[in-house]
Image 1 (cartoon, rainbow, N blue to C red):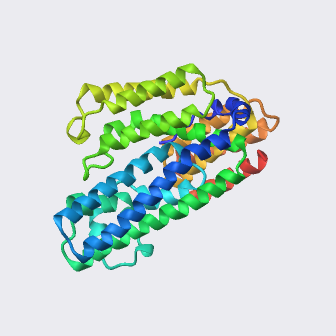
Image 2 (image 1 turned 60 degrees about the vertical axis):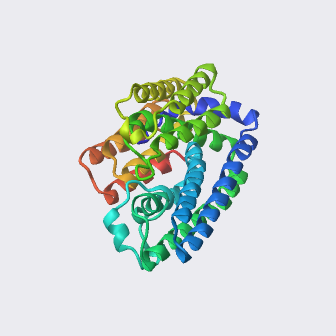
Image 3 (image 1 turned 135 degrees about the vertical axis):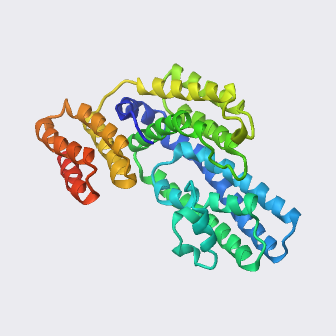
Length: 350
């Protein structure tokens, strides 16, 4: 769910650049990526040893290594922009298809869809149904190796992205990712398990809170969002574990309320830069409707786009295209009918 309040982004851009955002991001994200690379590499190596000589002790070690890698990944979710979208499906697709996972044994991993790869496929095999036969043990090794390869490639591309992206782009991306994560926490995550086989959904969300606090510390949002980020981090740290058995606990409701309060505070950040704002809303629409088929989220993005268009010289022409686009989305039109309209708006906003 990505109802980005993107008009809040642009007012931050000039300030963020003056405070060395690129350097701050590198100092924050690089250790997380290095830790993730190291832990997934250890997980892959340990899976080979386990497959050669399965034991209860070896399984426990694999579970510990999976938890350690997961902590790094969940903190990084606050920085999920740039090249992350190319790797996220193969690292963290949820839910997975258990039937397809069982049928995928023996199939080359690179030929498998995201629903049977990544953290959660490994989670099922390590915590729910540990492999017993040689074929499934070998598949466990291949999945762990694939996870390590994907993470290694992500680290390399993320580093290159930080070097070439402008501070303006990085500020917009970081702010949008923070808004998305705050909303996901109160609207989705704190209502549903994310890592149920390992019974660590609470720990996932606590890592999200740590990452979100680090992300917002890099942006000059002002005192209220910073205070609310600290309050959210504390509320998430207080979640009962395993959360899978405690959805009715008052501490869950408190964390939801804190996440929503942070989201609402960020949404009230001053606006500016109408054309860039419109481009960001249009990109959000492309991700939500064309990428994920989310009608409501797509329409919400078009509402934001319409507001951004009001102060542009191209407003009348863009509004005409927008009205046709909105009617197509309301009718659930396929991508091939919608994409030309999106491209026309993108051309108009260049």
